[in-house]
Amino acid sequence: MQIENRRQRTPSQWACALLAIAALGSAAHADVERFAYTYGWQTPTKGEAELEIKHTQPKSGHFLQDSASVEYGITDRWMIEPYIVYNHSGGFKDVPDSTGSVDADDGGTGGGDGAAIFDPIRIGSGYRYGGFQVETRYRFGDYGYKKLLTSAYLEYEQLRREGNEMEGKLIFQYDPNESSDLVFNLITEQPLRKGAPAEWGYSFGATYLADKKSNRYWVGGEAWGNWSEKQHFIGPSVGGYIGKSTRLVGTYGFQTQGVGGDQFRVMVSQELN
Image (cartoon, rainbow, N blue to C red; front, side, top):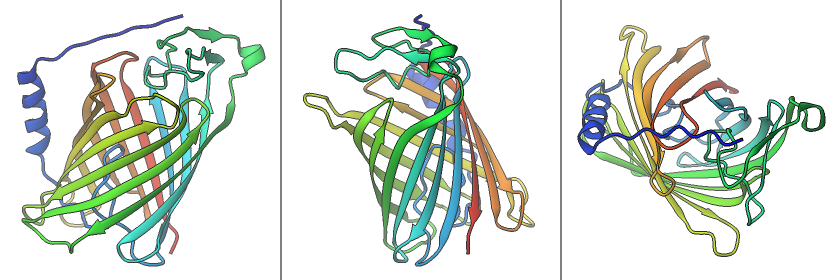
């Protein structure tokens, strides 16, 4: 079964959409993640720890992905975050391609080189171990308004659906004032198999503080995609504190190009100290 849903946008439409997100702005603190897909400049302080749960689901697909991680500050600038990943197949199984891997960018529809086999009795439809990831980030400089903030990100992942891979990000953040925050990630992914080409992508986000008295709730938007695979998404993002030290962030992405359809991600973060 191969499901394909391709939608195209002109360069002018893309420019208008990105400018609309950029116009939102935000009142993001330097140490709070406010996006589901885009990484900000901030890192935890030394000894600070945070539990993070992510749920990612394509609207038209069957493969859901959850992850649990603990973010820990090694120093005030350098952090590490190991992940455990779980997949939910819904009774479907991707057929591997000629290299032995499946197309993980098809939105869970099986629309890669092979088909998606539906056999819930043999395959099962519950959660299964999907692999692990280890990421590390280092931020440069000191926080301030009207300056370009930069940090670097490196990740190793070993996932059952995607294989072994290295991923790097250059993170750029610019806060023109205390109520504005714009973030851009330049992303490269390198599969660790012979002859596999590197892939390039991006993510961009901005938020607007909805509750300026308490600074606890925000709305905004994100755009992200993979230039190599011609997969692109854009959509609204909302978030806020649901307790003294618990945050909830969600982003819904409308697919503007590619296969698999829309997708959304929900992230819950709990400060541990």
